[in-house]
Amino acid sequence: MAAAADTGLYRELWISFVSLIRSYVAAHDIGRPVGHALVDAGDDGHLSLRAERRILSIEIELTSGAGSWALYEDDPGPERVLEQGTFTIGEDSLVEFSDRRGRLELEVAAEAFTAKVFDEE
Image (tube, rainbow, N blue to C red; front, side, top):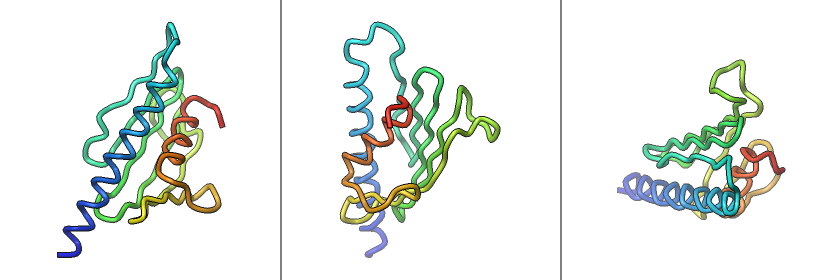
């Protein structure tokens, strides 16, 4: 029974995380006459974000909260990887990145992912 509850928890955290990312992307695009970013629906534990000449691909295992991400130049492919790493969303909604120290609140982590694709770190 606990496994079913955990799956539901991570699914809900993922939905919230995707929503935050979509909000940050929309806020970034306000007032920009061209170059709007594209974000998919984030279904089934996968989210793609495309802006200008970068693509950010995020995947999460909805049963554990463990995920991976990769930032590509132009098109996905091993030869186009600019950065990549892993992350974990905890039951407390704090996010731990493989390339950062400490744990971040969900909204701060969403902003960090958005900054990667817009090259604003």
